Image (cartoon, rainbow, N blue to C red; front, side, top):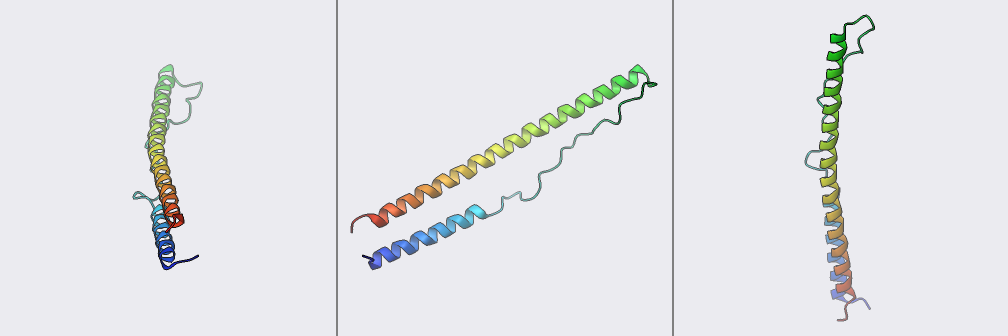
Length: 109
C-alpha cells in the first residue's frame, strides 16, 4: 500500500539520486586535454659521414628525450589513478545511499 509517507520517501530518494547523478556528471576542475609532454625530440640520426661526436651527441639527446617521456607517462599514470579512486569512491557512496534509502522505504511502518 502506498502511503503519504512512502510517497515522500520515494520523492526524496529520487531527488537525492538526481542530485548525486548530476554531481557525478560534472566536468572535472581541470577539464580539457592533458598538457602535452614538454620533451624535445632529437633530430634525424646523423649520416654515415657524420663524426663520432655528432653520433654521441645525438644518442645523448635521444636518451634525454626518452627519459623525459617516461617521466611524463609516470606523472600521467599517477594522476589517472587518483581520479579513478575518487570516481570509484563516489560510486560506492552513491550505491550505499541508494541501498540505505531503499531499506528505509521498505521498513515496516
